Image 1 (tube, rainbow, N blue to C red):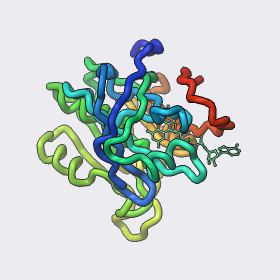
Image 2: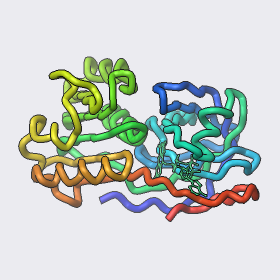
Image 3: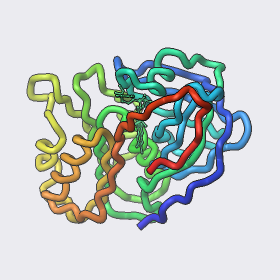
Image 4: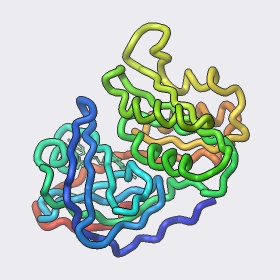
Length: 256
Ligand SMILES: Cc1cc2nc3c(=O)[nH]c(=O)nc-3n(C[C@H](O)[C@H](O)[C@H](O)COP(=O)(O)OP(=O)(O)OC[C@H]3O[C@@H](n4cnc5c(N)ncnc54)[C@H](O)[C@@H]3O)c2cc1C
C-alpha cells in the first residue's frame, strides 16, 4: 500500500508551451517550469491556476511520467461555465504563465508490483492512467499491463498512435479502445459490460480506474464482481466542485 502524499509547499510559476485541442472537449496543456521542478509520483495531481489570481485553482492529474526537464502535461475537459477549464480552453495562450502547486493524491502504483495491472479510463481520466502506464513500461519486468480507454466515438479516442506504438514496442502492453456512442461490432460499448469478455477472473489483478464519478463507480463495481480485491482497486474520481468565485486572489488550498 502506497503512503499517502503529504501536502507540500511547492507552488511555482510554469509557462504554457503547448495548448492542443485533442478532441472537441479535451485540451492537452504542456507546461514548462520556470523555477523549481515539481517532484511527483505518476498518478498524482496538481492544482492549476493562473498567475494573477483571476481563475480559481483546480485539481488536474499529471498526464506524463516525471521527466528530467520537468515538463508536465494536463488533459483538461471543457466544463460548461467552468472557470478554470474554460480559461485553459479559451484564454490561455502559449507563452503565458500559470501557477502549479502540489503534488497531491494517493492514486499511485507500487513500483515493485509484479501482478498484472488493468487500467480503465474515460475522457480526461486518461491523464493519471497514461502517466502510470508510461512509468510502468519504463521499468524492466514482465508485469502485464492492459489499458482500456472508453470514448464516445472514434474522434474522442486520444493517443491511439502513441498506445499503438507502446504496444508494438512492449509485448506485455495491450491497448483496447471501446466506443459508447458508436454502432457496429467494433464499438464494444461500455467498460463494465465489456470487462467479462476481457478477463473472467481479476482476483490476481491490480486495477486502476479514473474519470467521472459514475464511470469510476460502475467500473470498480464491475471489477469487484469479477473477483478484483477491493483494496487492489484504486480509483481517482474527477468530482467537480462548484465554488463561488469572488474575484479575490486565488488561495492555494489542499482539496478535501
Ligand atoms: C483529484 C482530482 C483530479 C482531477 N483531474 C482532472 C483532470 O486531469 N482533468 C480534468 O479535466 N478535470 C480533472 N478534475 C476536475 C477539475 O478539478 C475541475 O473540477 C474541473 O475542471 C471543473 O473546474 P472549473 O473551474 O472549470 O469549473 P467550476 O467553475 O468549478 O464549475 C464546475 C461546475 O459548477 C457549475 N458552477 C460553478 N459555479 C456555480 C454556481 N455559483 N452555482 C451553480 N453552479 C455553478 C459550473 O457551471 C460547472 O458546471 C479533477 C478533480 C479531482 C478532484
